[in-house]
Amino acid sequence: MNAIQEVFKIACAQTIIALCSAVPAIPYNHWTHKENRIGFVIMYSLTFFFANFGPNATTFIVPAEIFPARFRSTCHGISAASGKVGAIVGAFGFLYLSQSPDKDKTDAGYPPGIGVRNSLIVLGVVNFLGFLFTFLVPEAKGKSLEEMSGENEDNKIRTVPIVY
Image 1: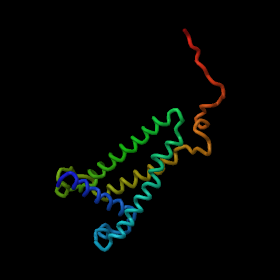
Image 2: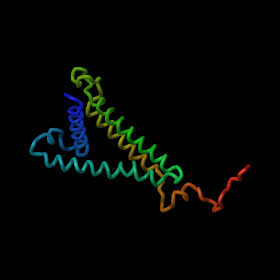
Image 3: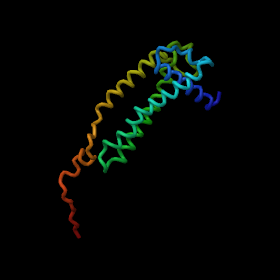
Image 4: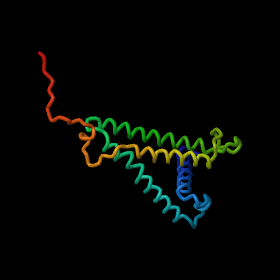
């Protein structure tokens, strides 16, 4: 198997895992049957919608609102980079954690993990913590960034004397 085939296989497995965690009442094998492919596409679409509806807003819209104007681009870049690093850690961490605890049942080249069920529980807890931490972000309440940060408390123009 080459790298592209492995990435495709991992992406398919993670998609099915995400879909099954979105609707835990439907067993995993349900989505693997050919007659359920329309349902699979619908669930895949809903998963993408809700993934972009919530976390995407937190990643891209909220930082543009809460950082003061003079630091906005730098802080927004740091915020976006942190989100990307978190996505990479989550993807690879889930791949390693989801391996079977039994060394004989793990995929070739991977150490034993905690299993798929426990990995999904860890994933759910991390997602719930992210949901809770989102509520710690200050609300703009119609104020400008300068009003929120207190940058323009006095309207005087401050000048620095030039010494020759």
